[in-house]
Every structure is written in C-alpha cells, then in structure tokens.
Length: 310
Ligand code: NAP
Image (cartoon, protein in one colour):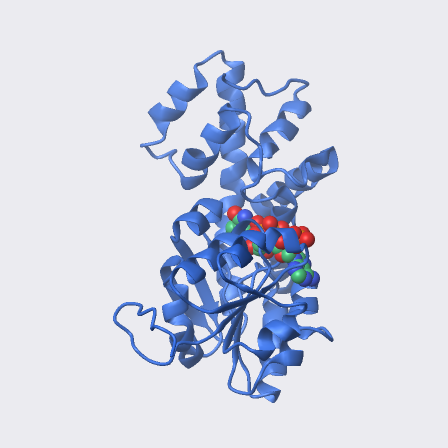
C-alpha cells in the first residue's frame, strides 16, 4: 500500500496521477506531486524535458492514452488549444485510455468551448472533466503558489483538490464546464494593458535618463505597483528575456479573449490594442521570448533599443 501523501489532513485511497506536458509550467507542477509521494505516469512531446522527473521516480509512457490507462487523475498542461485537442480527444489521447471513473483536468490556458466539448466527450465514457487553468507564472509553478480557476462539476473538483494543493495557494470553482477558462480570460484581459503600461514605463524611464532600477523601486509600492512590474522589470533590467510566459502564448490567450468578447458582442479596445502590439512583437521574432520582451518591440517603434543594466 502506497504511503498516503496526506494533504490538509485528508485521508483516503491515494490516486495515481497522470501528467501530460512538462514544459516551463508542467515540469515544476509535476515535480511537486512526485516530491509529495504520488505515483506519477508522464508523457510529453520532447522526452528530454521529462528526464528530471523520470530520474525522480516518474514512469514514462509513450502516449497520453497510455498515461491515462494506469491513472486515476490525469492533468494536462500543454501549449495551445490544438495541443489540448490532440492530447485529450485525439486517437492516442487521454480519453482513448481513460478508465470509467477517472478524472481529467486540463490546466492549459485554452478555449472555453473546447473545455465544454471535452466535458461532454468525457461524460459519455463515465469520466469526469475539469478545465483548470492557472495564473502565477513560472515563479508560482516553481514555488507551488499558483492560483487555479476551475470549471466543471464541484464534486469532481473535490476529488482533485488534495492534488492541486501541492502546487496551488488558491483554488476556486468558477462554474460549469468552460467557466475556468473564462475566468482565466478575465485574468488575461486585466493583465494585457498592464503589461503594455509596464513596458512603456520602463522605456520612458530609460529615455528620460533616470536610474531605471531606482525609479522602479520608488513606484512599485504605490498605485503603479503590480506583479508584472515587480517580477518582469528586474528581468528586463538585467537583459533576461527568457520565458517565463511566452509572447506567443500571450498572443494565443489574447486571441481567445477577443474571440469570446466578439461572440458576446463586447468591444474591448484596450485588449485589442495589446493584442496587436503582441502580434507585432511575435512578428519581430520575439514569439519565444518572455512577455516583457514587448519592451524590445516598443523600443523598435521609437527607433531605439533597450539598454540593460550590468
Ligand atoms: P511550454 O513550456 O511550451 O510547455 C508546454 C509543453 O507541452 C511543452 O513541453 C510541449 O512539448 C508539450 N506539448 C505540447 N503539445 C504536446 C502534445 N501534442 N503532446 C505532448 N506534449 C505536448 O509552455 P508553458 O509556459 O509551460 O505553458 C503551458 C500552458 O500554460 C500554456 O497554455 C500557457 O499559456 C499557460 N500558462 C503559462 C504560464 C507561464 O508563465 N509560463 C502561466 C500561466 C499559464 P515541447 O517541449 O516539445 O514543445
């Protein structure tokens, strides 16, 4: 009998966890589960990216279906909605291998409509499905301090809560299938213009000849402060544009939010402007860099460049 990795005092049979997608976020999240003592079955597109997890005791599986076949709960954390469709609904996807009574939670930032489609396809098989996208970035994933926004059935969330608690500081049920993804879109709409503001503020500080670090330190505790300013300005100042959160993933998110807003008859011009600026950043070859690389695209607009602080 496996030792119970008790969470918050909860006791009961220990589920075997399946994990699909071990990129920037998934690798950290999955690591927390292995460290907690869960038995984990894992697959991802590029096996090297799972090697550290395999070395820590996870079992490699060739496909998401194989992951699901031996798992009670399967968590997916891939890139785009097309990836989610493939790893959950595809011929070798999670639902092709899931046992009745199993549960799949997609944690990718994806489309609300796809989440509802997965819920319906899973229900036919007697499998539970949640959409459970996250915020908190690579820092939150590393530190086990993510926020999870959940759509689906509340009783399914209850089952997976002890698992989520291993890498989340906040888990909130938002409503039926797709509601988690809608909540994540609210998060992205709120962040989008803020990121433009952070990047423009840094450029302004530089062009005005200020000590950028000093001015950021001065304004961060006030009304201009934000998670984005505190976490991304230091990276930009030392010339570190590694993701974090990739520009192309943000373009994906802002596109989903715009499409949903259009479908609901809602005009969100601030969001549309941010999306266009991020599309430009991607077109300038910055798609694989972190979202604070917008700074470099904006600098190009003014015929200048971003000077890093040694
Ligand atoms: P990432 O580093 O690109 O990780 C995605 C992983 O999924 C990659 O390792 C990728 O394989 C794998 N994958 C993609 N398609 C697959 C498939 N068909 N089969 C198997 N594996 C597949 O991205 P991330 O930064 O971890 O982000 C993951 C999701 O979380 C995205 O939807 C993103 O928008 C969202 N998110 C990210 C952050 C953040 O700060 N990074 C924060 C909140 C939410 P390869 O390695 O071969 O590409």
